[in-house]
Length: 142
Image 1 (spheres, rainbow, N blue to C red):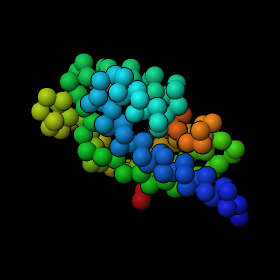
Image 2: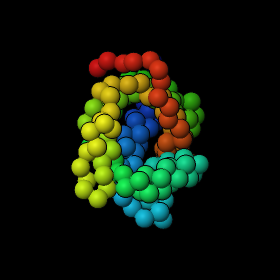
Image 3: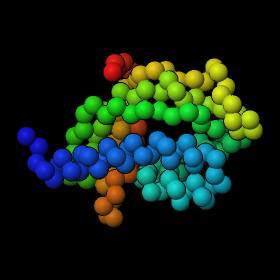
């Protein structure tokens, strides 16, 4: 049975992971330095830099995130300051929109459920931040 400390850490990692997704959609609409400040609260420094490059490409194509994803974390493993989460994400209400009209580009609507593995890292400040995500080939069902 996990200790109370591990359970608390797992819960905090899941909360940070869940919050990240809403923040990432907002960041696409912000100027670079504002996006950096916002994302740095939810992602590790390496992850922020990669995301800022992606945001610049997105903005150049007049794209932005549309809708929202719903996370369904199914498993969390915490080892010290690293947490690994397995999510059966529902992205069926998300996609890309034209940033000038804010309307969904129909061909970009995402799949209903897919497996995501996320690595969270707890910083010196005690906050959990997203360090890496990867889509897994294994389908999942809710």
